[in-house]
Length: 193
Length: 112
Image (cartoon, helix red, strand yellow):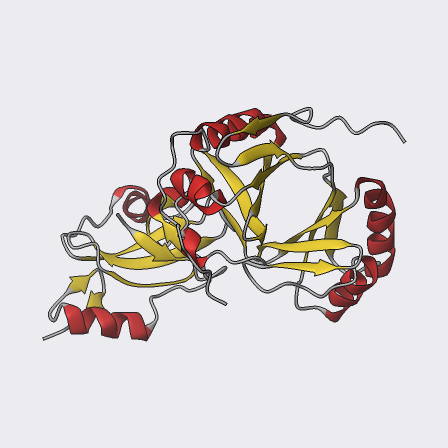
């Protein structure tokens, strides 16, 4: 397979939080009736997990599924698996009213690593970062653009945004994480469980 | 700062995540309707200093339109509800009556 050409070409910035481009992913947009058993079964077979709750991201043995809106999910897989997963999904859903689309190249993915990830994101998004726990998936505004944010653990955050504004998102996060800009807002913070 | 809860995803949304969509519960009068109805539909809007019903879109989030009831002066939010309704839910009307006895908005409000 050809080399995936990512939005940020593997760029990274070392501030008090490290901002870097996330590893390439396969992404599949899936729209349909999230309550239907056909969609549940197809998802279980393709990714290995059920439909996530609103504002949540569920992890299966072949990837993750994020809740985008009441009728939309985003499936995250390894880059090589996207095409196979997509055809498996389409076959399983058959005539059921749905849309499944390979959107792997549509978005830029950024990873933040460090103790201050909540603070760096809190500076540029309106979400209450104290309510974010690993497993919460939140689409929101990142400075002037829409983006999705989730934590995979207390020191790692992920950001997804459209590829055309990927550079902007990266630069905003790099400025937000610049050394000397520490606020200490979440020092000693314990996430609710 | 106006903070609304999106009734679709349940997220607590800051005003900047949302797009304002103007007055709620309008009845559309399109081609073929009476001129006066069309004019009313197109131009006549409430501009209250008090409880108001509005449409909002969770633009940076789930992308869905919803309705919100709020006070235009105090920014008190009486509640949000899905867009698939033609009139405000009774519990929201009750909540406004409790906070602002004697209020009125178009055909809704306290009748004395």
